[in-house]
Image: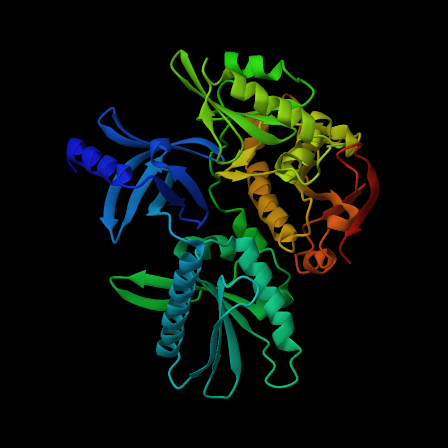
Length: 492
């Protein structure tokens, strides 16, 4: 790839449209103006830079393709350990986009149905549809030669987490099993390699009876030949043979000059989250400024969600106007509780409160002295704490009912437990010199009382007994004064 030619071509494509929709491989999208996308050459590499809700992102462009109006970039960073496929699509009307997406998902569902029949001769397809809730899953039912029916669930949106997939499969299994006619007791989940690998590990955390009802299989694509592959179920003990990802902690936990000045405006409300690529400054958990350090210079963007600007002398007053609005509306007694600044990122708000004083949750907890969200393999954990007896605690926070909460927490538990068993958490001294106990990690589920999903206990009871859950019911007015109303052990 000729770097100069590629740079010119990509920049010309980006300049050809005022507004683009950036679509991540996960399916998450973000609207950008063309001037908010940077394509440069640094150290003989093409670098893509853009600002999204996670802050300023930098990726190396490994390959690109412009086809049917869509610019697709294969990008990498962190010495190749992170890879992504990013698409830039010119913005079109939401109605046209929705219709196009539905057709594409149905086409994919029918292709998978054909693959099922090819892999299961003398079977016939009984049903192919998208799920009614959000249209992200294909629901396929086929009948074997023996007249036994099997249900198949697969993500056709490429935007659903493994936890949501497993949650949907269990929900669907319950409905199918109680049908009066043609009840179905087996649900397959079909997934492509990367998702399959993660699903297989999450599946290992289920109780044995659920492992027999929910079967995870891989759609293997090789040399233009597709096939469905099933491997033996993993046991929990198999998970500890995996090589854990490197613990990623910033080398220096020290606020930049710009961040320090911003914090002084409201030190009891503002905190900073550190990452490899800079700092995110939050007001009661809501990101409103992002700072990137390049050598000795600092570049600061400010704004909420898609409204952003670079902080300089000309925009200084706009920044202070934003800060004044945050002080007015992002507070428990906001004069307008419909205002975006009050409604946005409620989980981050609660997380920021607990991060500032973890003893509000339990007087025996010690928060990691690393003042950032602990990361393992690129994943984010709300809070990782240590009980004074040395027991590790994963804290999963919600402010809205979420049926996938249990599986999100269980997957985090798996990743932390792997690091604990390998001794990496102790070596990294994420709790300073405090000793981490040689006992399994616990899970604390934290939410306002009415914000726990009504099936929380049911889903907890699909998980293997090795994993302990505790439910912390908070008061509904937690923004004003956070209190634990009740603590329950969740499981039979």
